[in-house]
Amino acid sequence: MDSSPLKIVFIGRYTEGETGIVRSIQMGLLENGYQVHEINLKLRPHLIYNPYRRFGGHGPVYVKWPAIKEEVARFQPDIILFCAGGLTFQPEILEEVKKYCTVIGITLSDPDVYPTVRQFVGKFDYHTTNSVLSYKQYKKAGITNTFYMPFGIDSRFFIPREPVAKYQSDISIIGHYRPNRLEIAQSLQDIFQAKIFGRGWPLKSEGPVYGEKWFQAMHSAKMVVNFPKTGAGYTNVKVGVFEAVATGRLLFTEYFDEMRQFFEYDKEIVGYKNKEDLIEKIRYYLDHPDEAEAIARAGQERCAKCHTWKQRLHTFFSEITLKTPEKSWSDLLQS
Image (cartoon, rainbow, N blue to C red; front, side):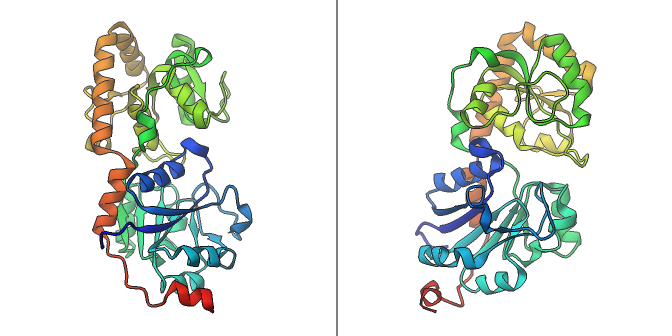
């Protein structure tokens, strides 16, 4: 790639708002100095064609090319980037657009969405997955354009914020309800009066928090508990790990091997084996706040050094080769 800033059309849905992962990736692009033209599908839902009624990252969910063709051509991008949501163009349109620039798809909900997105992601010039398991699955299925790009975080999450009285707690759970989370959440609420933030909880909850309220909730907790199982029951390194650690909270998550690639247990984050082990460790670190603070600080430093979207995206773009366009955006505008 040459030294001029990449020009990227960024297409995403922002279902989790300003603190969601799609926005965080867009911020990572900007932090790298890339020129970004944003197409926010949450604000422009008329651009979506979803004939199969796919949600939660499953696809294909089509973006209507005729409705954005002129604004994209005027920007003259090097890359069109579909950020999650099962987003793509219809097959014949995708093949035509690939003549003008490199088209990339980012999948953020693997392994859960692999069964549907594998049907079309091989048609992108490049594709990324958040899951080691799915990376292997794509390769086994003969999909050779896929890179493994784990979750990261943008610079906003490292900025200190003052706690808010109504959100203050020793322990918080910030995530939506799933049945496999209920037993631990109930015990933490009973024993430690844990605050719970998210949709659908059958327990006392503060409800979902987005934007600045999300930051307030996270910075008002001393410690945060993470659940590594996905909705489909896979154990996975999730974005909530990086979000909590970046804010300087002491993070508790289950022991599993993949996590060791990112943080060292009991030195940068705290691992637990089961509910009883978690409760015992929470009590210990509440009684030993200096140790808790040292682990949280070490985790935050590791996150800033190794796990930002700025770094992830820079690495990815340095590993790929942008195609030489077959057609000119200027010609498209004149046609």
